[in-house]
Every structure is written in C-alpha cells, then in structure tokens.
Length: 335
Ligand SMILES: [Zn+2]
Image (cartoon, rainbow, N blue to C red; front, side):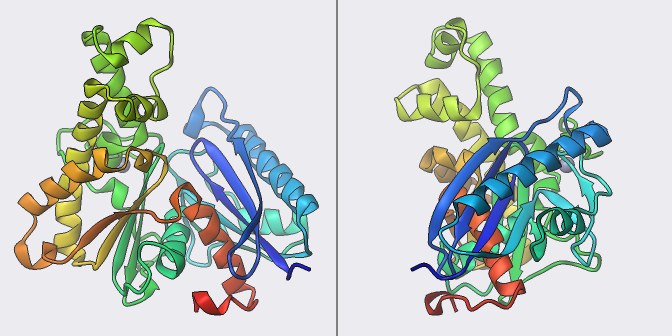
C-alpha cells in the first residue's frame, strides 16, 4: 500500500517532465511531453500560452489517473520570473507565459493545492536535500538546456532577492559585445546566449557546415538535425569535432563560473539540465578555466559537480516543493 503522493512537474523551454512521487521522493509514474510552441516561440501570444497550459493540465491529469495513491498536492517548476508571492509569471525568457496567474489557474482547473517556484530553484532544492549538494549550506545551480536557469542556496535557504527574481545566473554577461540573448531577454553576451544547449547546437551547425569531413559534418550531410543531444552522442562515440564544440561551451561556462565563485564563494556548484549529458567533456574545461581565472580563496575548495538527480532534478524539486509547502511529512532521510 502506497502512502499519499504528490505530483511534480518541470516545465522546460522545450519539454514537460512530470512525475508522481511519494514522501521519500520515490518516483512511481513519469511522463514527458513536448511543449507546444507556435511559430513565434517565446514571443507568442495568448493563444500560444493557452496551448502550453492545456498540455500542462492534460499531463497532470494523466499522472493523477495513473497514481498508485491519492494525490494531495502539485508542485510546478517554471523557467520564469515569478512575483514575490509565487502566483503570477512576471517574465519568461523562453516561453509565452508573461503575466499569467499560473498557480491559481492550475489550482482551479485541477482542484489540487498548487505551488510554483522557478525551475532552477526547484532543482537546487532537490539537489540540496537528495543530490550533489547534500549537506552544503552555500551552493549554486545552473540548469543548462534551451536556456540557462540559475539558483542560489545561501545559508541553507534559497536566496530570492527583493522581488523574488534573484538567481538568474544565466543572464550574467560574459561578453559585452556578444550575440543578442535569447527570447525575451534584451541583453547581449549573456552566459545563456553563449553556453546554453541552443548555443551548443548553433556552434555545432557552424562547424558541421565549415568542416564536412568530421562526424558532425557527415551527420549534417546525411540529413540529421544538429541538436545538443546529437552533439553529445557523437562526442561519446569519439568524434573530435563534437568534443571540441562541447569544450568551447565548457570554456565559456568556466568564464561564468569564475565570476560566480568570486561573488558567492559556494561549497558546490551543481550543473544540471539536458546539456550535462555531455559530462566531463563539458565539465573538465569548465573547471580548468574557472580555476585559472577565479581568485584563489573563493575557488580553493569549490566543487563543480554534475546534478546527481540528472534530468529529473527539476521534477523531483517540484514534488519536494509540493510536499514541504502543503505540510505533508517528508521522508526522514530527506530532513
Ligand atoms: Zn540574457
């Protein structure tokens, strides 16, 4: 007999990942869907936003129907800036969800106590209770996917800033004259514009076009779409060009990490999101550049680690949010 469950959903820039979890964060059901974006992507209008909500609600209903025990609460991690009460999406870089009262809409449509947080905050919450940042009081998280999400754990609590918008580490500028950032960000040369999964795919396509005689070039000639996962697959298969592109992204990530460790002096920086599938091909150059550029006292003992909960850290964090905020008992091993 299963104990009562909660649903956690990680709403990403391109994918929705949801799960039914118990109070020890055991995952009983998991489902994934594509985020239905119109031609205008993040800049899409109200109709595009409604399509995203319909997909989200349908996913949650399907999870609930498959749950082995009654579902008591719902947590959603969103790649957005929320108002201080975490009710309304104030700004979304990669999704058409601006000004949307998402918490109330979901609570009303689903009849479940619903809690929202930024997706990277949720992921860091999970990693700090049950993953790579377990036991750390001061930690940072970067979730590298379509964009780059960020979160700050300060003295054991998520640091939210004056208006709830802190932790957007992906929008730290690492090149003043760099390319325009993505979606709705007005800045140039943000870490997100240079080291996200989108940047990885863009750099890989450039290399595939200019160097037809490499694994990437041959994949392009064979009609394959050059995506982050394909680059990672080719790198693991031994293609040097794919490894070089990931190392370039890792180098840029290292430049960002040098500033972050100087500013925050964390115990650990956790790197998650889809791009972390590249593993040490990404992290080794990132660590090396970080150590070469950061001030010695800050960088001395910091660990840069892969998210232990992998691609599920956001989903598990959203479930943890639902457990904690609804007052349900959290498994003793997670206290
Ligand atoms: Zn930006």
